[in-house]
Structure formats: C-alpha cells, structure tokens
Image (cartoon, rainbow, N blue to C red; front, side):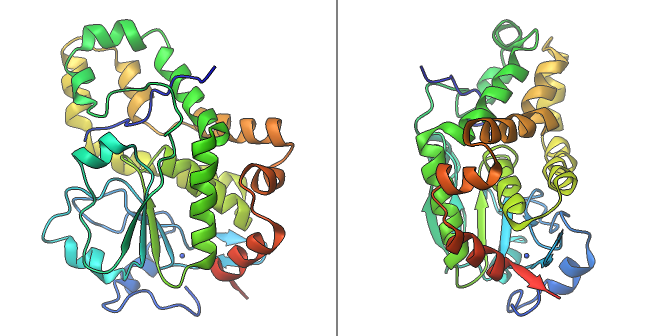
Length: 294
C-alpha cells in the first residue's frame, strides 16, 4: 500500500570555465558563502548549489540553482532572474500547485514539469492556508507528533515512489547534458528540492556534513518568509510543534531519505545506479560538468 503524502505542498501557495550570466550578478554570488540566498526579495530561497568542496575540486557556481516556487516574482527581481541566463527550469510540484502558482519566468528558459509525487496517495491540500485556518482540526489530524511522522514518510517516498525515481532520473540526466545554467524547484524549496539537492551534492562527492548544512540553510530563508502564517496558526490555538514540523527543514527528514536509499539499494552509489538508472558514464559526466578540478 502507498504511504500517504503529507508534504506535497508544505507551504502556501555552481564557476571555473563557465560564465555566470551575461549581466553577471557573479561578483556578489562568488563572494557569498556557499548556500547563501541570491538576494531575491520575492524568492528568498533561490540559491546556487556551487561553491562546495569535493575530493576532486569545487562544485562550479552558476550552473545549477535550487529554489522555492517562482511565483510571484516581482518586477524588481525579474531582471535578476533573467540575468542568470537559465536554459531550463524543472518544476517538481504537483499539478494543483502549478495551477495555483504557475512559474513566472523571463523569456528563454524551458519550463519542464517533473511531478515527483504523482504516484503518492493523498496529501496535504495544495493550499495549505486551508489547514492553517482550522488549527483545531490540524491539532487532531497532525498533532502528537503525527506531522513529523508524515514528514519522514514523505522523504521515504522521494526515494521509492516510481514517479519520484523517474523525476529525479530525468532531472539528473538533464543536469548531466545541460548546455547552460539550470534551476530546479518545488513550493518551498526544502522537501522535493531538498532531496534533489542533497542527492546531487552527494553524487558529486560533497561531504555529508556539508550536504546537511546546505539542506538546513533553507530554514534561514523559508521560516522568516512564512512567519506570519505560523504566528496566526499558533495564535488561534494551533500546536506550535505542528508548524515547526511542517514548515522547517529537519535533519531527521533528510536522514530518512538517505536511510531509505541505503537500506533498499545497499548504498547511495547503488541508489543512483539501480534506483535512478544513472550508469557510470552519466555519473562521470555529471562530475566532469559540475566540478572544477584544481
């Protein structure tokens, strides 16, 4: 039986050898620590995946970006988004999420839909404000640690659902074959995007503790963005633990996905080989494209 998914819409609706973008927000980006927000006021969790160390060199900046939903993008931020010179944007959300908050993109990049949770059975409504507006019902449905359990189960689904494996395979193949900067995102940029980023950095050889650091940096940008929703929910009697377990990126969630991958396939290498069907040639190509060797 399929596990129910309760994070389908958890929030309301890298440099050497490659150019960063024709208008080059490069200087600010290169100077910033890896994992930092690019400073888009309307998309605070838009970040470059580059700048991290691997045994073979640094992950290149300006090639792969991770993000929350690209809606709304303000008129002030749209030129900054255009300056990234994106060639492809991969949307990992469900159809209701896309319908309610369609990507707002500059001319140029292809908008590619990869529905990670297409095979999930049920889930939180696409408009989470409905749940937050009924805190007493939320307390019954998600209280007493249930939300954290649902979070763990959802991250396990990122590894095992056929739709998730197909989506991440397609994403990684596209990143391997990319001809320019690419971006992938979900709604908050923390769950579906969080696993995609963590798996990619792991494949590239980024140390585990740094992979977790990048994942948890989401909290610096998403929690402030949705603080008003959290405050309203708790003020009306909602369990603060529900809000924390729902809105935050948590180490135990990411650990659940890694544990699922290694227990099912034997190792992360075999997850990439058997779970995603990425052979040695593809993995080498990914590393060659995304790592700047010394």
